[in-house]
Length: 451
Image 1 (cartoon, rainbow, N blue to C red):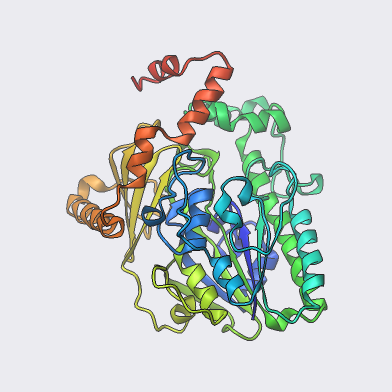
Image 2 (image 1 turned 180 degrees about the horizontal axis):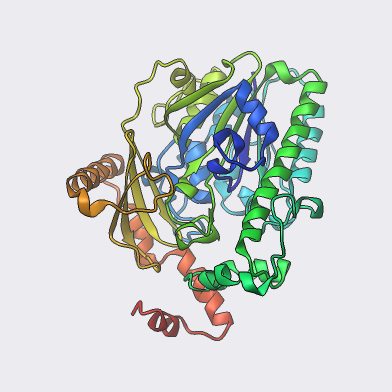
């Protein structure tokens, strides 16, 4: 069985039609999900990009592999830790990536016999280019007798949201430059990371006033991506390769589009960021039209791929084989834990019955409370913190989270707290941005009343 793992960077689950979104952003993915297997509750245990993909590749949690921050100068994956493509290569698979993660960290290149590195900033690495590279490889692979594993990394939903011109007004009506719509921008200005996250908007879109227009461009990027995923699929079908391929679609993290005061970025561990899509499709291997309601995680992807490839699973991998989950042979998880340590250091625990506790570890520039409690079954947008009325649940979940962390850390230090002592990457970027404007870090902190 050939396997294509497709990463749709920065794609939040709830902006796809198959996950209940009202806009028609994903007609192709929706149709594929209806014929395959969709996991309703897939979560990233470690976000954003570098932690998430390290978890996907290793099937280890961030507290185990140590990569919990994006852009950290102190965190490196041990050379002793092997990753998914290495196991597949050694088992006789041709391993190919169309990806640029190796520009960020060296371990993302391990195990690949062929690594196509698209040129330029992610703004230039558009879906048409990734699909074109993929098709070139597929034409060559069709002539080989060896099975292949291909990793395709699409970046379109990531900032900056600049889809082709013909997509830009599909989901927006009106004048985004109307000064009377400037309230949303004024709220954006209050964000602590405004000086970083506003630059691409003003540089590429001009004097936008209505931030709903910016959010609509995010959706337009998804639609553009969806069209090129369909083009890839059609090529495979037209070349009689479909029967022997398993597709896996997922994302490293989602995106906050103004929710919780976070504007057009993926820090924070609200549902907008940690709830990601996971869709599997195969003509012959999987059942049709199945929706899995129980928790699954990024750590489950590598063991599943190895199982399908008939490769013995390494004993240190923490995830489950999703084929067993699909067949109902796995006990449902009681809870999952997720964390972020780039712009701020927070962790969350989410239970099967919908309770979600968010705990601040440090580095917060938003003034969040130390603990937040939500019931995401009743309050999916996490709008009402109900900890004061449920302190018994807060204590129980906090203890459960701490036990999980201790169990997985063993005798190792918590990499989140180690990073905090050194300094968060997001704070370093903010400091650099402020100083480029002639604003000292200490002056800014005093003005914001952080010191």
